[in-house]
Length: 375
Image 1 (spheres, rainbow, N blue to C red):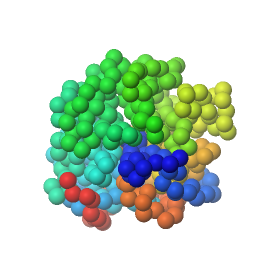
Image 2: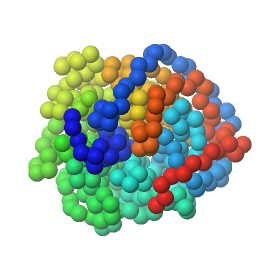
Image 3: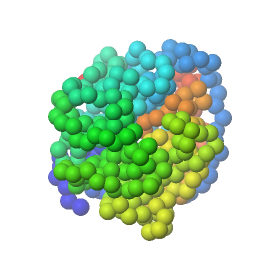
């Protein structure tokens, strides 16, 4: 697939919490991995309260390869491509759910964050180590996720509080238009290479497709869809997990990732055209999924704070890439790779057998800092 340099740039940075795009168009091959099971590592040096964690570090010069947003305490953690914790982005933290949710990068490599309680998408300023207002106008209510338009570079934001998708200028953040409404709990959102928009409605059990003119049902009868990812193979990947008790994920329940063709047909593991299941239920509640620079699929488990890695072609489990400390586990929501992860990666990140404790590193001050493009 031939794309312009502008579209290549957009493809490399799209990660609406879900939202990295077609790696094949960037010429990045997918190295092979030996698939193996790695035991969940034990956690150490965990503080006893959330405030202990939030007071541990305030790092203002950060560039990471992988970012994870923590809804519960409204902050963002940074990791390198080997799964090592390297930094913390925070400000005046809003404790309680409804903080840091959707996450990704704009066309200038600035980190963006959907913040539910502020009803806005904000942009990170590395000079002040704060997230500042980016979207202006509109009527967002609990914005959940967002995606950069493949063709226009604009920002499309799902707002589950009022069941809408709204469009904002991708450079200035100014409101442009209401794209769709009456979508129920509009959560996951993604665009494909042709500029089509996909929206997950959690309570409608459906994926909608907007082609720039009209809205239609892309997939129906899909239980509790959460995050959508446009894959390097051109297929649409959707994470699902059990929310039969309402909006709360259930412990020890089911979670899966399904795959669909561009026309909404099932295309599961092994090319199964009858069953869309790509990654078999393993009890993980994937709040976010993203393809990494190695071509493999990463899933963030909202319940355990674990990031699993799966073969991007077969869906087979490879390893537990990293695990966040238990204190933050149920608040882990967004997952996004920094654009530099794709442009600079020479080889795939290696499996991590003993990820270091984030909180332990913070406690002893072993937080490394790099430079993020300044806002």
